[in-house]
Length: 424
Image 1 (cartoon, rainbow, N blue to C red):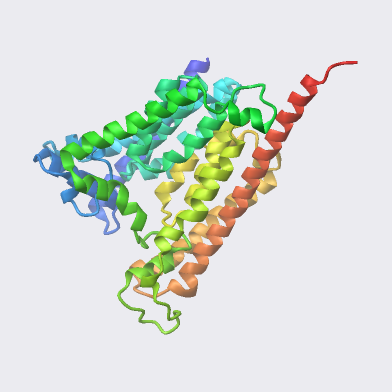
Image 2 (image 1 turned 135 degrees about the horizontal axis):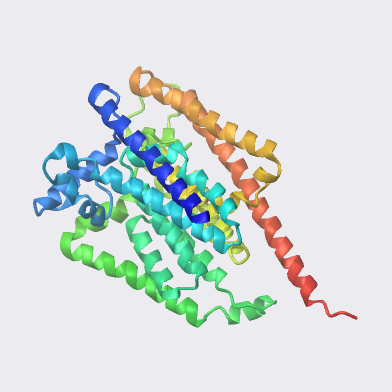
């Protein structure tokens, strides 16, 4: 019965994505507002360069690993009308596989089969997830990689975990934030004091994991550099240090990045600051990395998946560039946190959080519509104010998440202390 239920969920999820994909083909053919994401056109153009034995980086704005363009080589096959959507099908299949792995990992954490299906549905039946993948975003593949990493860590497959993490960071930089959490999660038991923990930090598993992750990451990078040279390093990694993307950006840094990317400030309402002298795109990393890769990993030993969710949520919230695709980075981890969260224990809080999250996005999208399609200038205060509201809502949600993890950690420590008490 359980297997039938899993199969039914996966089939229904596949049909949902097929419907979105077919609708997208119709919209692309009949509407000036295209369903296909511009990034997908970048991917397929890059694949076309690779098919012609050239570099994918000849395609302007291709900022990804060459492996992605290799995966999409079938999109260059003829007839084009049959093969062009191959990448969308691949990304949607990644969604489904990620959902299946979510079910497996949830059961490792003690969820019943029925409960695991319920929470996995948050990903598999999520229309936002289905839409983003069928529009041609590669985040579904990343979801598979991240859940596979979590599965391998929980199964204590140390070498496999390191290899997956190295591959994940090569594929998309941000999963490096999981490294400190996984290393702390590997803390040996029965080390109650800080001195013992420091002395015992270097263990066989940690060394193997670190060496394997570094070897996987550097091996892929060296191979890609040998083929594509300096453009690979510049476009895949260095570009993200100085990127000034302000379009389709939910971040409160949006307006500052727009001003800095402009040769001058035409509107007298904007402050007369020489933004070219500032390093906004670099300073933005400070709070982002402090929270996501230094502070939050401290919770990992007691609740690794919830900590990874909180890390990813913080990383996206404080990122200088936030697009809808980035929401998938943490949505794939949401099922692991939500089952023991205050949002489920007190549904009113959950409903308020969801409504606030959706409404502030809608507020931002309304301002963006005025900019993109009506040619108006809503940057100040409209667009920035909407981005700030969305940021504050996300900060509040992050606070609830961290509070929940802290409560779970304290409960676990309390139970351990009770077990260690010697009866009189």
